Length: 431
Image (cartoon, rainbow, N blue to C red; front, side, top):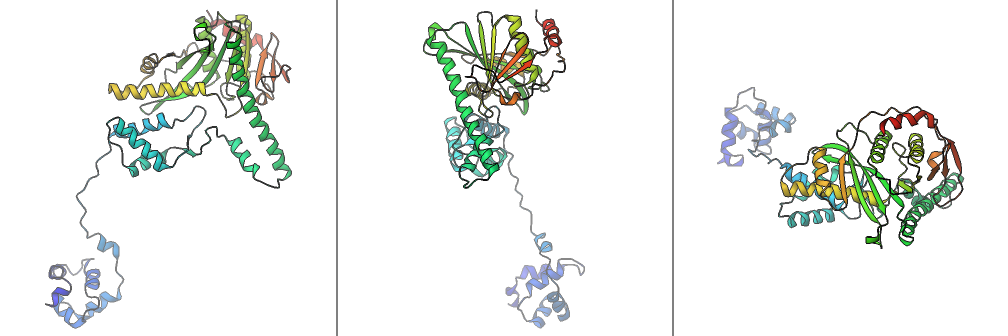
């Protein structure tokens, strides 16, 4: 009956272990704790000294744990379709707006999951578990938890400094610059709205407003550039609002970058196709991205365009980090359309020609593969120093004129153009 203290099977197991087994001493120690040594030695058929020796040694827990049998359980691999649906949900409900590498979400992750659960239920799909959703989807995305969808690093810094009292001289100077940033944001947005209202109020059919921006399209894990060019103009049939047409120029390959050359090539194509013949004035709006919009080369190109078309070109820039939602909306529309097509048709959209087909099915959208030939090798332009602080440019045959904000009628800077250096390059491409 003494064996009932430690289990008959364990005793037999231990007695049958080889003398050199690494499990023998740890098991002997654990099984004989607080038991009479002489009696236990007889039961296990070992000497009392062996029992004492086992108690003097430390138990290697790893050796004992390794004796546990491994459960014959395999975790089912999550279907790619379930993960893709979760990513689609995030893209549709909490999109990453153009010009940002993060998503703005004004709710807790529990609330996000609740919305996702309803999203799946509406589509008769089984949702991921909340832990899986957080680990595989939510935690791998860059999220800003804030109710302020206009978040930018400058505005965030301004909010911080507003609560600093007293401020140092350096902080006071920085605070003043950030206040001006916020004022320019409101001013440029207000000016854009006023220009659109002017076209409606005065029925200006000869003025075209162009808003442009880039977005990235993810096709089966591969990214392609989509250059969005939005045309807004007065139309008698839509007298209360501007007629809006959203054009998508999709890069044919993944190695095409969203640089100034891409922009110039697309605009040369639009000129060749006669997109501007009906207008006397073309007002362009975009963010101030120094990579592809607010550059010396681009300013020289639009000066050339004005001379070639004999039309007035005015280029406006929104305040940094505060582009306009019309291009964000166009980007959201095409991404949603791609996701819906894949879900309803059961076909993956893998290449740009498929994107074009999907986009051409969206109301007020059209798409085409962006031209990539011929190659454009731009000359070295003299840098327009101070260009980043300017938000409007006009042109004549000799100079580009820069204005601090769009509403001002007098320029703050003027820059000599390099007409002879680039005109032949562009003329060779134009038909």
